[in-house]
Length: 371
Image (cartoon, rainbow, N blue to C red):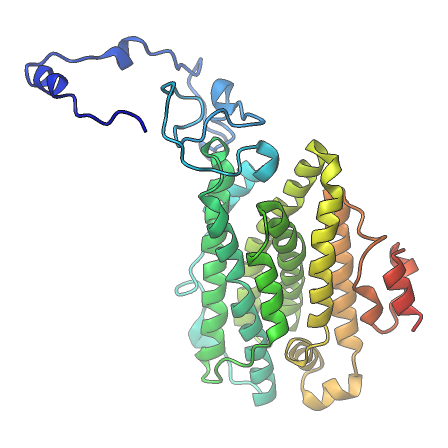
Protein backbone atom coordinates (compact mmCIF):
# COMPACT_ATOMS: atom_id res chain seq x y z
CA UNK A 1 0.00 0.00 0.00
CA UNK A 2 1.24 3.51 -0.82
CA UNK A 3 2.35 5.71 2.05
CA UNK A 4 -0.72 7.62 3.23
CA UNK A 5 1.11 9.43 6.04
CA UNK A 6 -0.08 13.02 6.31
CA UNK A 7 2.67 15.47 5.34
CA UNK A 8 2.20 18.06 8.07
CA UNK A 9 5.30 19.95 6.90
CA UNK A 10 3.66 20.49 3.51
CA UNK A 11 0.47 21.66 5.20
CA UNK A 12 2.51 24.17 7.18
CA UNK A 13 4.30 25.43 4.06
CA UNK A 14 1.02 25.90 2.21
CA UNK A 15 -0.34 27.92 5.11
CA UNK A 16 2.67 30.23 4.63
CA UNK A 17 1.99 30.51 0.89
CA UNK A 18 4.90 28.24 -0.09
CA UNK A 19 3.37 26.05 -2.79
CA UNK A 20 5.04 22.95 -4.23
CA UNK A 21 3.90 23.43 -7.87
CA UNK A 22 6.03 20.57 -9.25
CA UNK A 23 2.92 19.23 -10.98
CA UNK A 24 2.54 22.60 -12.74
CA UNK A 25 6.15 23.38 -13.68
CA UNK A 26 6.79 19.87 -15.01
CA UNK A 27 3.60 19.77 -17.11
CA UNK A 28 4.24 17.66 -20.20
CA UNK A 29 0.81 16.47 -21.22
CA UNK A 30 -0.09 18.73 -24.13
CA UNK A 31 -2.39 17.32 -26.78
CA UNK A 32 -0.60 19.37 -29.43
CA UNK A 33 -3.40 21.68 -30.45
CA UNK A 34 -6.90 22.60 -29.44
CA UNK A 35 -9.41 19.89 -30.27
CA UNK A 36 -12.28 21.01 -32.48
CA UNK A 37 -15.70 19.49 -31.78
CA UNK A 38 -17.35 17.34 -34.44
CA UNK A 39 -20.64 18.33 -36.06
CA UNK A 40 -22.57 16.75 -33.19
CA UNK A 41 -20.33 18.14 -30.42
CA UNK A 42 -17.15 17.07 -28.67
CA UNK A 43 -17.17 13.27 -28.79
CA UNK A 44 -15.03 10.60 -27.13
CA UNK A 45 -13.56 9.82 -30.53
CA UNK A 46 -12.62 13.50 -31.01
CA UNK A 47 -10.50 13.45 -27.86
CA UNK A 48 -8.90 10.06 -28.59
CA UNK A 49 -5.79 11.72 -30.00
CA UNK A 50 -2.07 11.26 -29.38
CA UNK A 51 -1.24 9.61 -26.09
CA UNK A 52 -4.89 9.93 -25.07
CA UNK A 53 -6.04 7.76 -27.94
CA UNK A 54 -3.30 5.17 -27.45
CA UNK A 55 -5.31 2.24 -26.11
CA UNK A 56 -2.89 -0.43 -24.89
CA UNK A 57 -3.25 -4.06 -25.90
CA UNK A 58 -2.51 -4.87 -22.27
CA UNK A 59 -2.93 -2.32 -19.49
CA UNK A 60 0.38 -1.55 -17.77
CA UNK A 61 -1.22 -0.91 -14.38
CA UNK A 62 -4.43 -1.82 -12.56
CA UNK A 63 -5.37 1.68 -11.49
CA UNK A 64 -8.12 4.22 -12.10
CA UNK A 65 -5.63 6.87 -13.17
CA UNK A 66 -6.97 8.26 -16.49
CA UNK A 67 -5.31 6.94 -19.65
CA UNK A 68 -2.76 9.36 -21.07
CA UNK A 69 -2.10 11.26 -17.86
CA UNK A 70 0.94 10.97 -15.60
CA UNK A 71 1.05 8.24 -12.96
CA UNK A 72 3.30 7.58 -10.03
CA UNK A 73 5.52 4.54 -10.31
CA UNK A 74 3.63 2.75 -7.55
CA UNK A 75 -0.17 2.96 -7.43
CA UNK A 76 -2.85 1.00 -5.52
CA UNK A 77 -3.93 -2.21 -7.28
CA UNK A 78 -7.67 -2.03 -7.96
CA UNK A 79 -7.89 -5.78 -8.56
CA UNK A 80 -9.05 -5.59 -12.17
CA UNK A 81 -9.20 -8.95 -13.96
CA UNK A 82 -10.00 -7.69 -17.47
CA UNK A 83 -6.68 -6.08 -18.32
CA UNK A 84 -6.38 -6.79 -22.04
CA UNK A 85 -7.99 -4.77 -24.78
CA UNK A 86 -9.37 -7.90 -26.43
CA UNK A 87 -11.21 -8.76 -23.20
CA UNK A 88 -13.79 -5.98 -23.63
CA UNK A 89 -13.07 -3.82 -26.67
CA UNK A 90 -15.10 -3.25 -29.83
CA UNK A 91 -14.08 -0.85 -32.58
CA UNK A 92 -17.53 0.77 -32.54
CA UNK A 93 -17.73 1.32 -28.78
CA UNK A 94 -16.99 5.07 -28.79
CA UNK A 95 -19.64 5.76 -31.44
CA UNK A 96 -22.15 3.57 -29.61
CA UNK A 97 -21.55 5.46 -26.37
CA UNK A 98 -22.23 8.81 -28.04
CA UNK A 99 -25.40 7.46 -29.62
CA UNK A 100 -26.55 6.02 -26.30
CA UNK A 101 -26.21 9.25 -24.32
CA UNK A 102 -27.87 11.29 -27.07
CA UNK A 103 -30.91 8.99 -27.39
CA UNK A 104 -31.95 8.43 -23.78
CA UNK A 105 -35.71 8.53 -23.25
CA UNK A 106 -38.11 8.40 -20.33
CA UNK A 107 -40.63 5.62 -19.79
CA UNK A 108 -42.58 8.06 -17.62
CA UNK A 109 -42.76 11.13 -19.85
CA UNK A 110 -42.22 9.91 -23.43
CA UNK A 111 -44.96 7.28 -23.59
CA UNK A 112 -48.56 8.44 -24.03
CA UNK A 113 -49.95 6.21 -21.28
CA UNK A 114 -53.35 7.90 -21.27
CA UNK A 115 -53.85 7.07 -24.95
CA UNK A 116 -53.77 3.27 -24.66
CA UNK A 117 -57.11 2.06 -26.09
CA UNK A 118 -59.33 -0.65 -24.64
CA UNK A 119 -58.81 -3.85 -26.62
CA UNK A 120 -60.20 -7.38 -26.59
CA UNK A 121 -59.30 -9.04 -23.25
CA UNK A 122 -57.53 -11.93 -25.01
CA UNK A 123 -55.29 -9.48 -26.89
CA UNK A 124 -54.67 -7.44 -23.73
CA UNK A 125 -53.69 -10.55 -21.78
CA UNK A 126 -51.50 -11.79 -24.63
CA UNK A 127 -49.72 -8.43 -24.76
CA UNK A 128 -49.27 -8.44 -20.98
CA UNK A 129 -47.78 -11.94 -21.14
CA UNK A 130 -45.24 -10.68 -23.70
CA UNK A 131 -44.51 -7.76 -21.39
CA UNK A 132 -44.04 -10.20 -18.52
CA UNK A 133 -41.40 -12.17 -20.39
CA UNK A 134 -39.63 -8.99 -21.53
CA UNK A 135 -39.64 -7.34 -18.10
CA UNK A 136 -38.14 -10.57 -16.79
CA UNK A 137 -35.37 -11.05 -19.34
CA UNK A 138 -34.32 -7.44 -19.84
CA UNK A 139 -32.89 -6.93 -16.36
CA UNK A 140 -30.23 -9.60 -16.94
CA UNK A 141 -28.66 -7.19 -19.44
CA UNK A 142 -28.28 -4.74 -16.55
CA UNK A 143 -27.13 -7.30 -13.99
CA UNK A 144 -24.49 -8.92 -16.19
CA UNK A 145 -22.50 -5.78 -17.12
CA UNK A 146 -22.90 -4.48 -13.56
CA UNK A 147 -21.28 -7.70 -12.32
CA UNK A 148 -18.23 -7.25 -14.57
CA UNK A 149 -17.80 -3.48 -14.97
CA UNK A 150 -15.69 -3.00 -11.86
CA UNK A 151 -13.30 -5.67 -13.14
CA UNK A 152 -12.59 -3.83 -16.41
CA UNK A 153 -9.31 -1.92 -16.40
CA UNK A 154 -9.76 1.84 -16.48
CA UNK A 155 -7.54 2.09 -19.57
CA UNK A 156 -10.61 0.81 -21.43
CA UNK A 157 -12.88 3.43 -19.91
CA UNK A 158 -14.92 3.90 -23.10
CA UNK A 159 -16.10 0.30 -22.87
CA UNK A 160 -17.04 0.82 -19.21
CA UNK A 161 -18.92 3.99 -20.11
CA UNK A 162 -20.87 2.22 -22.84
CA UNK A 163 -21.81 -0.64 -20.51
CA UNK A 164 -23.06 1.96 -18.02
CA UNK A 165 -25.48 3.22 -20.68
CA UNK A 166 -26.60 -0.36 -21.31
CA UNK A 167 -27.41 -0.78 -17.63
CA UNK A 168 -29.60 2.32 -17.77
CA UNK A 169 -31.22 1.22 -21.04
CA UNK A 170 -32.18 -2.18 -19.71
CA UNK A 171 -33.48 -0.77 -16.45
CA UNK A 172 -35.76 1.46 -18.52
CA UNK A 173 -36.90 -1.50 -20.64
CA UNK A 174 -37.86 -3.46 -17.54
CA UNK A 175 -39.69 -0.35 -16.32
CA UNK A 176 -41.64 0.30 -19.51
CA UNK A 177 -42.84 -3.30 -19.98
CA UNK A 178 -43.81 -3.59 -16.33
CA UNK A 179 -45.76 -0.34 -16.63
CA UNK A 180 -47.54 -1.49 -19.79
CA UNK A 181 -48.59 -4.76 -18.17
CA UNK A 182 -50.16 -2.86 -15.28
CA UNK A 183 -51.39 0.26 -17.08
CA UNK A 184 -54.80 -1.11 -18.13
CA UNK A 185 -55.25 -3.25 -15.04
CA UNK A 186 -54.53 -6.67 -16.57
CA UNK A 187 -51.31 -7.25 -14.64
CA UNK A 188 -48.28 -9.46 -15.11
CA UNK A 189 -48.52 -13.00 -16.41
CA UNK A 190 -46.59 -16.21 -15.83
CA UNK A 191 -42.85 -16.88 -15.67
CA UNK A 192 -41.31 -20.25 -16.47
CA UNK A 193 -38.22 -22.01 -15.18
CA UNK A 194 -36.69 -22.48 -18.64
CA UNK A 195 -36.51 -18.71 -19.08
CA UNK A 196 -34.77 -18.39 -15.74
CA UNK A 197 -32.29 -21.12 -16.71
CA UNK A 198 -31.12 -19.07 -19.68
CA UNK A 199 -30.76 -15.97 -17.52
CA UNK A 200 -28.83 -17.95 -14.92
CA UNK A 201 -26.52 -19.28 -17.62
CA UNK A 202 -25.57 -15.70 -18.52
CA UNK A 203 -25.15 -14.50 -14.95
CA UNK A 204 -23.13 -17.57 -13.93
CA UNK A 205 -20.75 -17.30 -16.90
CA UNK A 206 -17.18 -18.14 -15.88
CA UNK A 207 -15.78 -15.09 -17.67
CA UNK A 208 -16.86 -11.89 -19.39
CA UNK A 209 -16.37 -13.28 -22.89
CA UNK A 210 -18.68 -16.22 -22.26
CA UNK A 211 -21.39 -14.05 -20.75
CA UNK A 212 -21.09 -11.43 -23.49
CA UNK A 213 -21.45 -14.05 -26.22
CA UNK A 214 -24.52 -15.53 -24.56
CA UNK A 215 -26.12 -12.19 -23.75
CA UNK A 216 -25.15 -9.71 -26.49
CA UNK A 217 -24.99 -12.08 -29.45
CA UNK A 218 -27.64 -14.63 -28.57
CA UNK A 219 -30.00 -13.35 -25.87
CA UNK A 220 -30.22 -9.66 -26.74
CA UNK A 221 -30.14 -10.44 -30.43
CA UNK A 222 -33.24 -12.58 -30.06
CA UNK A 223 -34.93 -9.93 -27.92
CA UNK A 224 -34.17 -7.44 -30.70
CA UNK A 225 -36.03 -9.72 -33.12
CA UNK A 226 -38.92 -9.88 -30.64
CA UNK A 227 -38.99 -6.09 -30.44
CA UNK A 228 -39.29 -5.88 -34.22
CA UNK A 229 -42.15 -8.39 -34.12
CA UNK A 230 -43.73 -6.49 -31.22
CA UNK A 231 -43.75 -3.25 -33.16
CA UNK A 232 -45.38 -4.99 -36.11
CA UNK A 233 -48.00 -6.78 -34.00
CA UNK A 234 -48.77 -4.03 -31.49
CA UNK A 235 -52.49 -3.28 -31.08
CA UNK A 236 -52.02 0.51 -30.82
CA UNK A 237 -49.53 3.30 -31.60
CA UNK A 238 -48.56 3.46 -27.92
CA UNK A 239 -47.13 -0.07 -27.91
CA UNK A 240 -45.53 0.51 -31.31
CA UNK A 241 -43.62 3.45 -29.85
CA UNK A 242 -42.56 1.40 -26.83
CA UNK A 243 -41.13 -1.35 -29.00
CA UNK A 244 -39.52 1.12 -31.39
CA UNK A 245 -37.71 3.00 -28.62
CA UNK A 246 -36.56 -0.23 -26.98
CA UNK A 247 -35.42 -1.50 -30.36
CA UNK A 248 -33.05 1.42 -30.92
CA UNK A 249 -31.45 0.76 -27.53
CA UNK A 250 -31.17 -2.98 -28.03
CA UNK A 251 -29.60 -2.55 -31.46
CA UNK A 252 -26.67 -0.74 -29.81
CA UNK A 253 -26.09 -3.54 -27.32
CA UNK A 254 -26.16 -6.16 -30.05
CA UNK A 255 -23.82 -4.08 -32.23
CA UNK A 256 -21.33 -3.86 -29.37
CA UNK A 257 -21.49 -7.58 -28.62
CA UNK A 258 -21.12 -8.56 -32.27
CA UNK A 259 -18.10 -6.33 -32.83
CA UNK A 260 -16.56 -7.27 -29.48
CA UNK A 261 -16.64 -10.93 -30.49
CA UNK A 262 -15.17 -10.01 -33.86
CA UNK A 263 -12.36 -8.06 -32.18
CA UNK A 264 -11.66 -10.81 -29.65
CA UNK A 265 -11.45 -13.52 -32.32
CA UNK A 266 -9.29 -11.38 -34.60
CA UNK A 267 -6.82 -10.94 -31.75
CA UNK A 268 -6.90 -14.57 -30.61
CA UNK A 269 -8.35 -16.96 -33.24
CA UNK A 270 -7.49 -19.94 -31.04
CA UNK A 271 -10.40 -19.00 -28.76
CA UNK A 272 -13.01 -19.78 -31.41
CA UNK A 273 -13.63 -23.21 -29.90
CA UNK A 274 -14.47 -21.62 -26.54
CA UNK A 275 -17.05 -19.34 -28.11
CA UNK A 276 -18.63 -22.26 -29.93
CA UNK A 277 -18.99 -24.07 -26.61
CA UNK A 278 -20.64 -21.01 -25.05
CA UNK A 279 -23.14 -20.70 -27.89
CA UNK A 280 -23.82 -24.45 -27.93
CA UNK A 281 -25.05 -24.20 -24.33
CA UNK A 282 -27.10 -21.09 -25.00
CA UNK A 283 -28.78 -22.48 -28.11
CA UNK A 284 -29.91 -25.63 -26.33
CA UNK A 285 -31.74 -23.61 -23.69
CA UNK A 286 -33.05 -21.20 -26.30
CA UNK A 287 -34.51 -24.10 -28.27
CA UNK A 288 -36.49 -24.99 -25.15
CA UNK A 289 -37.87 -21.44 -24.99
CA UNK A 290 -39.44 -21.93 -28.42
CA UNK A 291 -41.56 -24.72 -26.94
CA UNK A 292 -42.95 -22.74 -23.98
CA UNK A 293 -46.63 -21.75 -24.42
CA UNK A 294 -46.18 -18.53 -22.41
CA UNK A 295 -43.53 -17.40 -24.88
CA UNK A 296 -44.94 -18.66 -28.19
CA UNK A 297 -48.72 -18.38 -27.88
CA UNK A 298 -49.07 -14.69 -26.91
CA UNK A 299 -47.24 -13.73 -30.09
CA UNK A 300 -49.48 -16.06 -32.12
CA UNK A 301 -52.60 -14.45 -30.63
CA UNK A 302 -51.33 -10.95 -31.34
CA UNK A 303 -50.33 -11.90 -34.88
CA UNK A 304 -53.63 -13.59 -35.66
CA UNK A 305 -55.87 -11.09 -33.85
CA UNK A 306 -57.36 -13.40 -31.26
CA UNK A 307 -57.38 -16.83 -29.63
CA UNK A 308 -59.61 -18.57 -32.18
CA UNK A 309 -57.76 -17.01 -35.10
CA UNK A 310 -54.43 -18.15 -33.66
CA UNK A 311 -55.72 -21.71 -33.30
CA UNK A 312 -56.95 -21.68 -36.90
CA UNK A 313 -53.60 -20.49 -38.21
CA UNK A 314 -51.74 -23.12 -36.25
CA UNK A 315 -48.08 -22.41 -35.80
CA UNK A 316 -47.52 -20.50 -39.05
CA UNK A 317 -46.94 -17.14 -37.38
CA UNK A 318 -44.73 -18.68 -34.68
CA UNK A 319 -42.70 -20.55 -37.27
CA UNK A 320 -42.18 -17.40 -39.32
CA UNK A 321 -41.01 -15.48 -36.25
CA UNK A 322 -38.67 -18.27 -35.17
CA UNK A 323 -37.18 -18.51 -38.66
CA UNK A 324 -36.51 -14.78 -38.61
CA UNK A 325 -34.98 -14.98 -35.13
CA UNK A 326 -32.63 -17.76 -36.21
CA UNK A 327 -31.59 -16.17 -39.47
CA UNK A 328 -30.84 -12.82 -37.83
CA UNK A 329 -28.83 -14.63 -35.16
CA UNK A 330 -26.82 -16.47 -37.82
CA UNK A 331 -26.20 -13.21 -39.68
CA UNK A 332 -24.80 -11.68 -36.47
CA UNK A 333 -22.51 -14.66 -36.06
CA UNK A 334 -21.36 -14.22 -39.66
CA UNK A 335 -20.54 -10.56 -38.99
CA UNK A 336 -18.69 -11.53 -35.82
CA UNK A 337 -16.58 -13.98 -37.81
CA UNK A 338 -17.80 -17.19 -36.17
CA UNK A 339 -19.44 -19.94 -38.23
CA UNK A 340 -22.52 -21.20 -36.44
CA UNK A 341 -24.28 -22.46 -39.54
CA UNK A 342 -22.31 -25.68 -39.30
CA UNK A 343 -23.05 -26.14 -35.57
CA UNK A 344 -26.39 -24.52 -34.71
CA UNK A 345 -28.66 -26.58 -32.45
CA UNK A 346 -32.01 -24.81 -32.99
CA UNK A 347 -33.58 -25.07 -36.48
CA UNK A 348 -35.08 -28.57 -36.42
CA UNK A 349 -37.91 -27.58 -34.07
CA UNK A 350 -39.45 -25.28 -36.69
CA UNK A 351 -42.05 -26.74 -38.99
CA UNK A 352 -41.12 -26.47 -42.66
CA UNK A 353 -37.59 -25.21 -41.97
CA UNK A 354 -35.15 -26.37 -44.62
CA UNK A 355 -31.65 -25.85 -43.20
CA UNK A 356 -30.02 -26.07 -46.63
CA UNK A 357 -31.98 -23.03 -47.86
CA UNK A 358 -30.37 -20.97 -45.11
CA UNK A 359 -26.86 -22.28 -45.50
CA UNK A 360 -27.20 -24.35 -42.32
CA UNK A 361 -25.18 -27.56 -42.44
CA UNK A 362 -25.01 -28.65 -38.78
CA UNK A 363 -25.65 -32.35 -38.29
CA UNK A 364 -28.09 -31.66 -35.44
CA UNK A 365 -30.18 -29.32 -37.57
CA UNK A 366 -30.22 -31.63 -40.58
CA UNK A 367 -31.17 -34.65 -38.46
CA UNK A 368 -33.99 -32.79 -36.69
CA UNK A 369 -35.33 -31.38 -39.93
CA UNK A 370 -35.76 -34.85 -41.44
CA UNK A 371 -37.69 -36.18 -38.44
